[in-house]
Amino acid sequence: MIKILGIDPGTGIMGWGLIEMNTGKIKPLKYGCIRTKPNTPQPERLAHIFDSLSVIIENNQPDEVAIEQLFFFKNQKTIISVAEARGVAIVAAKKFSLPVFEYTPLQVKQALTGYGRADKKQMQEMVRVSCRLKDCPKPDDAADALAIAICHGQTNRLIAD
Image 1 (cartoon, rainbow, N blue to C red):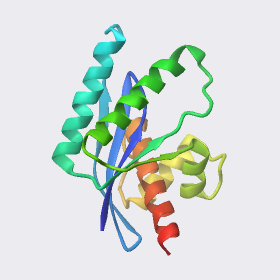
Image 2: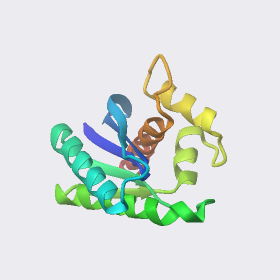
Image 3: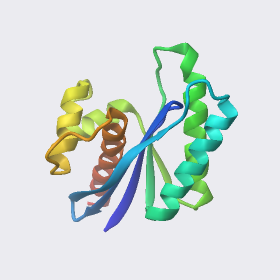
Image 4: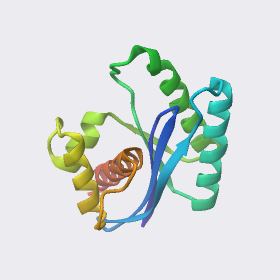
């Protein structure tokens, strides 16, 4: 049995999702978002993300952390701030000596749907089905974080088999 914390990086909203993997079965434990206020200076936003994520890690004791890689970004204005938030998330995980695994959006989509170009709706439905949930997790950032955790759990299982 392994507890995996998935992180969908963002500055305004950072999604997180905690799952438990046991012999290939996925059990969602908790999920949510860390939110920062839009007009807050970036250093304060990053400190809030770090502190909030540290509390989540301390309270939930994951074994591993999976985070989405940034490999292409449409909005050039936000890529740097999102990359900084991603870095803060990695540092928070390393503060607790947790191993960090990184996945591209393509890898996450492929792991969940078998198709690297799956759309948002398909991904959310696969998260709902994989976690045996009645409804899709809200907001989208939390569902994305669960998808990243599931991707890691499935990839890890495939490597171990």
